[in-house]
Image 1 (cartoon, rainbow, N blue to C red):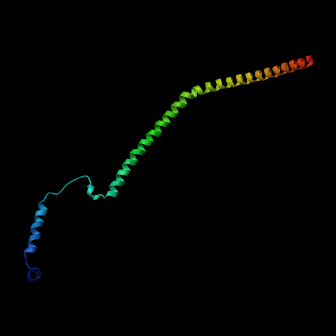
Image 2: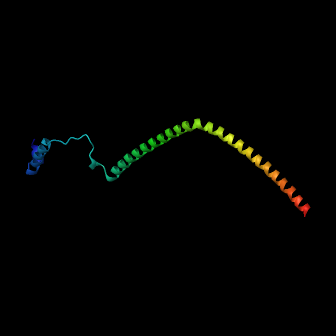
Image 3: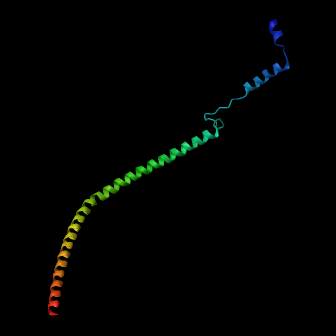
Length: 126
């Protein structure tokens, strides 16, 4: 014990921290389940904000794509039944067009022959 009394003399400074330690221990501790924002720097806060924004935009894009696919399926379903009918009508119209073109060609040939005959008659009269 004599060693302790010689090595550590009692002063006012050594007693003062003991009093403040008692005061600090009696103070109520702060309790929180959420992390403090002060711990994060501006870069980490910005990263978190951008991640949240990216997630929101990605979810909206996925919903938009799904809605587009649903609309595409409905359009195919709606026009799928009409497509076969339209194809049949188109083929009928194409056949009728070919027939009309053939008739026009024949009429052109007939008119050309008539014009040649009249030209011969007029040149023979002249």
